[in-house]
Length: 391
Figure: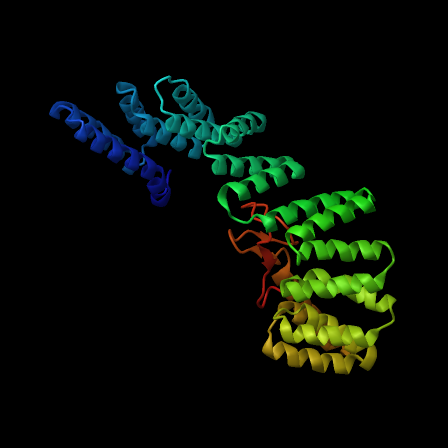
């Protein structure tokens, strides 16, 4: 069954098309009988929608469309309705029939072609969709819309160089900067080159990324990891430090590797100072946990327990509690140990399977960081979740 909210969105395009159609026919002085018949059929279709009978409603609107071949907007609305309901084959037929009409204006044909391209994308016919949108860009018809669809297709196919070309053309067409998006694409190419051990290629791609976005966080992370690959902990540590200077939300991604760099450099004081500064700047528990381990190693369990207890008063955290239980278990008596083990099992179940990251745009939750949200496909929107059950 269709919910009331879903029904509203199904109804909206048809309502707009129908209202426009009735108004237009009124200005053309259609006979009263024809207007009444059209109005009667139209509102009969709306009544079917409101009574959760979309199939009957579609049949009514199809009849309206068949009665008058000029109802382009009604056909477009019907095709959109079919696509949203998952009936992509019917949407394609509606829009193909519309495109085949010789009487369409240039604007109407462009609308129909864009809609047909969206049908192809929904059906997974990416080659057809790409050809159609490329043709529209070639004749400069609705170029921004077509370019956005082409970018989406290239992302699905992981054709980053084509995506860069389309994004740059979109920037020229709209005047809207695509620098951050293009930088992400160059970083994708850099990651691919690094995975193939093509260091020179990775560096060239990173240079392109930094040319578009000088403080590109992802570029800095790749730079740091390449320095680690080259056994250069000094350069790696500097790059990791720049990452948190640019975006403090990347602390969870940086902590483990940068601490390894400090260890290789035999600079424990630098590590401790870095963590101390992070605890002041970052609201999550990760740097606190890391600093508690440094304190444990240098000053003993008691000092680590005291530090962690103090920190948990101001930033409650299940992960922090797990660490406190871990420290408490070491010197616990048999009775205390049994109780702490039960508590440890319970708190671990609280965080088991919980998302640690969330997309700021669509709310998608994930256990690991993603540069592109798997749900809404936006870039750079996935951030750590803060709070008692998060970081």
